[in-house]
Image 1 (cartoon, rainbow over the protein chains, first blue to last red):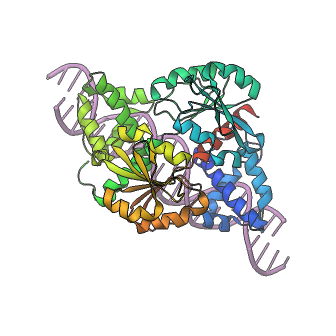
Image 2 (image 1 turned 135 degrees about the horizontal axis):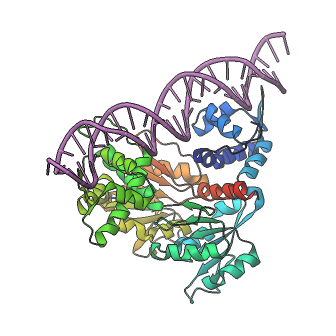
Length: 214
Length: 214
DNA sequence: TAGATTGTTAATCGATTAACAATC
DNA sequence: TAGATTGTTAATCGATTAACAATC
């Protein structure tokens, strides 16, 4: 694919890139340097067409007749997902979920760094959670400037989520990952991703009801 | 819709039901007893067609010319999602994420109960996490029978996830909610839902790269 | 060159939406 | 009955897949 103008990339395609990244890492560790779309797709339980189509949105990364160079494709996917930017993350809400995420090993492994936690509970302010300090929410703007964070993670009660979202936007964050079970209103230019944990488990519960009739 | 034989319900439809449940709860608390699909859909930022179509997979819940009875529809959705079954959950892996989930208020609010935690770290065995006790993983079968759990949540390292999955299946669990970033192999009859937290944040990171060009 | 595998096109499949007959 | 809103059909939109020309 050549110059793209304004091609819309399906959300599903973007969601599969981390999977490609992971399996390529495995091949890399096994010392495999070239891989076909057929082989990789088989490993992931998808069609090779889908894999090739997904990659084609971003460029021509393969070699016809040969396959894909593993470490080259890894580098490309890192770039596509911004993993080369070492993005810094602020977690708002130093409760159980917030502090658990602060220590989540998956972040660092993917070029992401939790740089600060924020809360309004005075008892928590100044404490360290692993290597990450907890600041008062009123410091959000200052610390953002100081530490260069780009993504705000909301692990706060639904009742205050909209209010805190406005603070976060005022502080200059352009991307929000929202764990509160509520639909946030944000301006067009803010990138919002909802992570609703209840949806996942209720989906399971539904399938249990349906398949087992109980 | 009448008898369904083997209608396939889109995953997207099931994922929206918890949202419908939440907004209906709000109407209920406001004392609103009847609601139109137009009103509800507007509130959620979707089309009324989609809402009506989603509900039509499960039955005829509305009254033409009037709308939907809020508390009746709430009851129906509870039933569809198995929220009336009070399903019990076992969390495997009493690390940060596992213990955070054990205390997650969203579960109880949706008729789900975390009944036990499991780990292999002797230092953790016997401890209480909130109201939930931590047992040794070797007790999984016994405790499942004793406490009647149905859903296993995996909050364990990817490296042991497949091995633990086999234990979980042997213990008789029929549904698995997997937080480990790995593709699990399970028999056909096991209901598996992957919750890959890295996908969410990398999606944000990608959009940051794309929209801001940085 | 012969064999292999990509990138892309066109066909297929599935989900969303607009429109409207049914009906409260 | 007149007005409103459902449940459903058919049209539209978008994503997946099969097939194959391009090419290493």
